[in-house]
Amino acid sequence: MSARTRPMRRIVILGGGSAGWMTAAALARALAGQGHVITLIESEAIGTVGVGEATVPPIHEFNRYLRIDPAEFLRATNGTIKLGIQFDGWGGRDASYFHPFGYLGIEMGGIHFHHYWLRHLAEGGAGDHAPYNLETLAARAGRFAPATRHGPVHHAVHFDAAGYARFLRSHAEAAGVVRVEGKVAEVRLDPEDGFIDTLLLDDGRTIDGDLFVDCSGFRGVLIEGALNSGYVDWRHWLPCDSAVAMPSERQGDPPPFTRSTAREAGWQWRIPLQHRDGNGYVYSSAHLDHDNAVAKLTERLPGKALADPNRLRFAAGHRRVIWNRNCVAIGLAGGFLEPLESTSIHLIQTAIIRLLALLPRDGFDPGIAARFNRETINEVERIRDFVIAHYALAGRDDTDFWRDIAAAPVPDSLAERIAVFRATGNILFEPGDLFGPTNWYCVLAGQGVRPQSWHPIADGLAPDELARRLTTLRGRVAEQLSELPPHTAYLASLAR
Image (tube, rainbow, N blue to C red):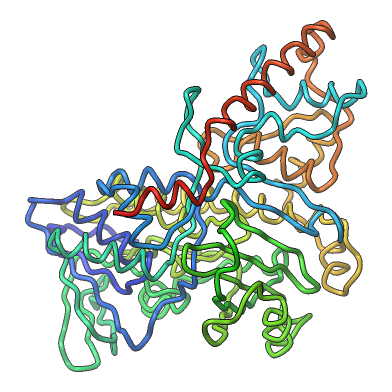
């Protein structure tokens, strides 16, 4: 990418949905009063992918940056609380485990709690670690409040994706973002350096810009259609390439967690909202055709279907170049990971934060774009490994899909993580990783991986002292749980 010097005043975002309106709202907030013109182009005829979303806890940081009131946000999006994910059938056909937010126990002696827990298990202790994580017990009991006297209750949210986009649109337009209804018919590039200069709409209007943000979804109209950025395909590791989604009537009180159920050719999600359930089946088209996927999802819906099935096709992976010349791809335009761990919104959020940190003032420096690309790809690769681990350790062989999964290779980086954990109990992670020791331990242990050893520092406590500390920790979690109201009572308290 060549350097280009020009005042960066006109920012054009192609595409709405969560990615487009999150980007627009954040840029408007960051650049308020500086004379920038932010234009978002979207077409009601094209629509968006959003079918109901689950998130991870950092969503609260983004909303705080936008000065969004949490109660207003949940009301506007029919949102509910998410304390983690219930995984059914992933550690074996009849197995079940919970992957919580928050922390498992506390660090002691400079090492993570799970090492003491592994020692406890080896010495014949009880095998359920749930009493050492508040979020797991609260999910089981259907309880929630943002905090107790001892600290926060770590949580994310479920929300209606279309409602979130509408909510952010109102914030962005109030901050000066100009929305243009239309479809792009042609992307005009500068003949000298290949930068994007102008978007020609199908009605003849033209939109000029200095910086273009591609939020056009899987199509990648700018990043791929105009700039031919290429794609790194991960389907040899993550073969699911299709999904069918369908909302259903709300059945009972909404639980404060997402449910993921392993199925014959992939997995099924259930996301509880205040007014309905979001459901979907992520599957491999090589192992299940679309009509059968629709039939199986329909028969497994928890309530009456509220809409026709929405079909999605995708390829796990990312653009080879995500910031290319004066175009940055955010959201599905930049890449895709199946939503097994609810990371789609998070990856939009971190891309926006990264763009704000590296936002050019008077031109485009190749080093800045290279830094953005390197950090973005490193982040998505680490999340990729966490998602692949669920498949690689599923231990199922009851269908062709799971037999093929069992025979498939895994990235060297993931193979190293699993091997080290099996041998030593240590969890390899980098500072800043989205998923830390509690996340990795709960998934690896939930899918049946039992380390052969633990950290030597964990041997430093006398047996009676370790027992005393475990009792204290259980008591504190139980005390916190007793302070929490029912999840439904918390949601009712948000009403005006």
